[in-house]
Amino acid sequence: MNNNMTDIVLKGWPPAAKDFAICPDDFYCQRPDAQQPGELFIKARTWLEVIQNAPLDEMKGVVTKEIQDSMVRAIFGSNQIERAGLNLDITIHLCRRILDGEDVGAICESDLDCQSTLLELYRRDPALRKLPRKDVLRSRNEVVQHCKAFIFLIEQFVFEKKHLTESLIQEAHRILVEGVPVTDCDGPDVQPEEYGGVYRTLIVGAGTTNFTVPKFVPANMKKMCENLQDELEAAEEKKAIDPISTAAKYSLEFVQIHPFMDSNGRMCRLILNVILCRYVGVIVPIGEQEAEREEYMQIKRDSSEKMEGHGEYATFVLIRATRRIREMKKKLSGRTRKY
Image (cartoon, rainbow, N blue to C red; front, side, top):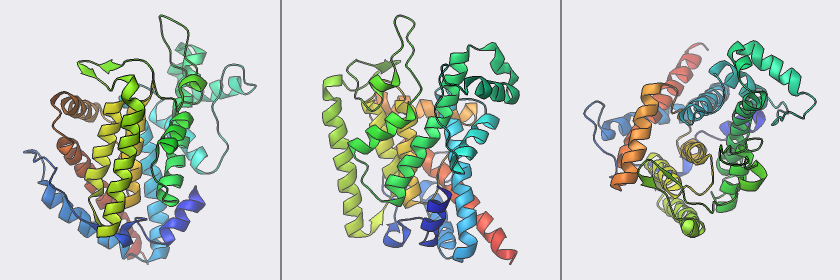
């Protein structure tokens, strides 16, 4: 992925920026504890222009590192929201190996390298010794496959500019859950081969929220993907887009459909971030800190229960996307001053 990232950065960053004007829509909610969305948008757009006008030789290393660092943090935070994965140190270690091109895959107890893998994990986090081996391996697989699913979507949707179709989402979900069975205390585990990329046939809910009835999941997913494609094609014609609102909207719509048996939350944040990466050039980590996790989950609950749209979530994402753009701009400016 390093080579792909460098190649795409050399063509301009963000990948779609040269083709679009970044314009805010009217869906954002005002927040008393933060700058107004319009002010944040102006800052973000100004900083993006600085990034786009930086010398390419100086841009490629900074942007590549920033995107990959943000990917790792996003994976860790997303797993934390779902009480999945492992600690930050191990998450960084595993993701770095994958991003550097090493062939790292899911592992089960019957694999020959299971014992050596466990010993390395125990060395990095001794507390894991107290857990069942299969649970430790599952948590490791949740990190590894999350990273691989992220890379897959970035390569397909950001680099290759393919549409975010049902089949692309289903394949990303299959990658995401490889080696991660769904555990059920009342019955046998559901193996990833049985549910990965497969629309659910059971009714599911969270708290007082009921998600889409199974028989309507295929039609709703088809409609969601078609609407996103139509919206992006219309933006291409107008040469203008609000990628932050768009990313928030379709990430939220996906999780409200909840198409799969498991891992819908992590999948919805992958969708959010690949849209941001393609049109804004940043990845937004969510969930690294407990307070942020609580705020995020409350926004999701309110959106589902009140059915008031994606405005509050869009503002939440805008605040964090603006920070990532500012950080990338600061790093680029510092790099430029050294020459």
